[in-house]
Length: 252
Image: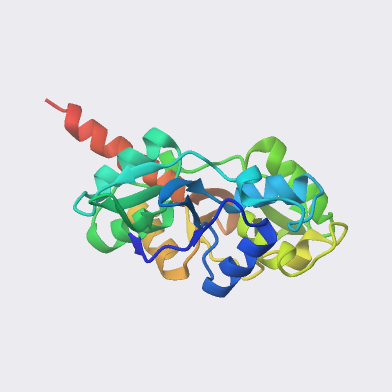
């Protein structure tokens, strides 16, 4: 769980919300009004609702682009409970103690907890994605965001001179590009994460979780024979935990 969550009002502009997100370095605040939790403002909401729509954050209120789906968790519930709840609602979770908001749980929180409490786990290969989406370093940010919206992916591997040089994520789109005042015609490589952290594809799920937790990343490219061939995300790890828990519960 992440305690002391950032909370924003649905009535403020996305520009105001971004300022608060930047101050706290928290990029998915809870949206709350008069004590009622309404949902989250996610990086994807901002990317699709502002950048892809060719609008400015000053034009739009939080309530116009926010995600209204969320799950609820109690402080005493387990990692497995959190994974189950997240997979059920396909969204972030709020943690309520006697009705009071005390924290949030994201996929990254579950990955971190799994890495800290698990010693052995299955290979990661069945849970990873092996058809990775790529974009050229010199392609525009506008094109990158369009592809991410159409393909419903949270990142693109950035290619230059036939080699993967980096990754462009939803957070890069919001934090580096939008908050940084970029031009949509700029090359996507300018705002990408170029110091790639990778992992051998023959590693285990918990090894992937530990790398993601240590590097504070949600997307981890996977290598086979020195070449990036796949990717595993924090949400993939959550789904794996949920599947393993479900299989254990159904076992005779």
